[in-house]
Length: 510
Image (cartoon, rainbow, N blue to C red; front, side, top):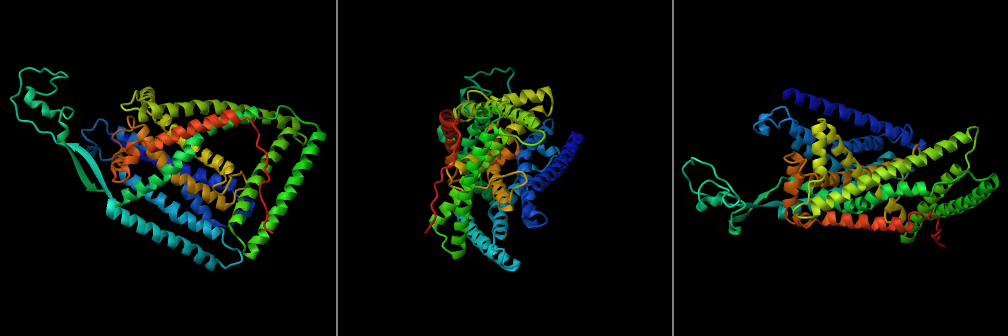
């Protein structure tokens, strides 16, 4: 079994290296031309953050494989070459929290600082914001940890007298223990309610930090994940339905392009006016509202320009371009249908395994176990896919709500045109939600991931933490997830086929 464990360590190292290389590739190809050969610190933070997010998702399947490496040992401690998963979990999530609440905000404040100021003044300004945040977070965490940083485990006190070793064995539901009725206390299930006691102990501070960070992430996860699990596949399917059916004529193209040019000039005029307001120092609530409105209109205008280019391909290879456009929409439809199947499976699994007590069926847990029986890593790979899909759904939900409700700053990711502040914002969102995705997966696939280090942290400690355990006891986040998924499905069924148009709802200050 030692050889298997050595192989697991090697695979983990190789995967970490590949993840780092892939994230560097994403950064190089997504970055804006204005950020080339500069902004090295934000770029370093982006690569590290994306790597931590990807590694944290992959750690849960690795935790399952790590536990399987010692399945034939008398106890896990007898298998000395397994990965120290509990320590790794704590390290990864402490680094995650530091990145989300301190390093990424510092990098954003520094990057978005006034370019006319010196580097020293920009660093000083960013540090002031981050230090203030650190002091507030540190005091809050310290006070909460001192007051309620404890876990309450419910246990049953079982006792039984001794009995002679029997000459025959006769067990049944009415007699689950050796001996007569007086010995039935050896069964925890048959013990009286008065035997239940509450065992209280103080959790470690790192575990408490992970727990509170998970709560913050769980709120965003329930909101973005519930919306994204429905809008991700349905958005692809309705994109196919709204696809351009044929190439338009040149006269139609000129007419549409003229209209888009007029909207672009209006947006430029609005942006120039907002820039003048910013320089004059009159940045009030109305100014911020108009900035978000202009950002939204600009994003919709870019989508219209892209759609117009699709309907009227130009150049020497216009026919080839149109063929690739049609194939792209067909691919979206296929991926949308497959994604819809996965989304329905996720929702059904949450209802069947988490919301109904006792669970009707292990469902996907059994699927992963059967796949493992077919081939050792097939179930683990399917398990990793479902976890990754959930994280992608969270990102899709965040982008969808950010565009439609405009209650967060829009930071779209664009190939070859993504500024570092947009990169940092999205990396922070991914990191914050990845903690909750892992906790959610550890709970949803508790049967498949049983006895792992992740279950010890996210399944036992977190769900027994004083003041927090009731959120998990009554499935608050899971219910919110299902409700939002249902509402999003109804919304898309009613309005998803419609093409959104710019609203022009922004007013300039006099």
